[in-house]
Image (cartoon, rainbow, N blue to C red):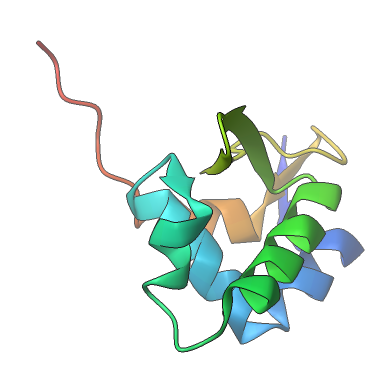
Length: 102
């Protein structure tokens, strides 16, 4: 049985509104470039990049470099403890669009 919980890693993210909003955006549409994310906020690019780095180091997002652009996607796998169903990822799944069958 999986326990629905916030781990300390999630709590550090949840208590920062900007990081939660970035995750919500990535849950809605992934991947997104840094510029796409910057255009959704009133914050400057270095600030968004800082938050993305924190999310990456915490395991919440993955990234791919294409040329001089970096594209971020949400990491849907609980990265710390697979026996815990992450409440943050569970909440964010409400924002994700279902996959469309061809």
